[in-house]
Image 1 (cartoon, rainbow, N blue to C red):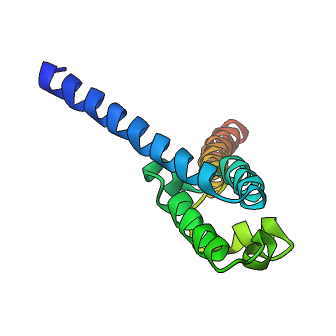
Image 2 (image 1 turned 180 degrees about the vertical axis):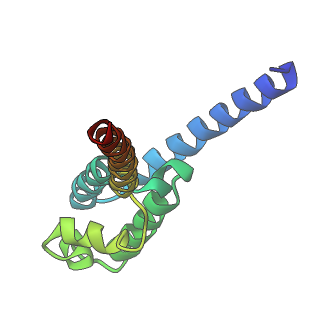
Length: 135
């Protein structure tokens, strides 16, 4: 790896930290009820695992935008999200790929490969079995 590549990675990490600190400051500036719900939303997404969370903070920043707007209008957080916060989260990522989706696809592919190998093995065994019977 070249020194220039290492410097670029370090700069990316530093920029990521700056972006995260600014993000955290926006969360802290929200009213208490919004902060509580935001933290639960964040936990939910980290567990459910929408892939786009690793591509930056677009989704989380969008939620803060929504929460800031709701707070500015004097709404309570549950007026913005609805009383079922998990359903609110699911609705936000309904068209997004999750790590669970990727794992499910991978598991399906692995089972298909294994079953194909098993069928090939069994068919070879079946052919050799017929050869033995013919002798």
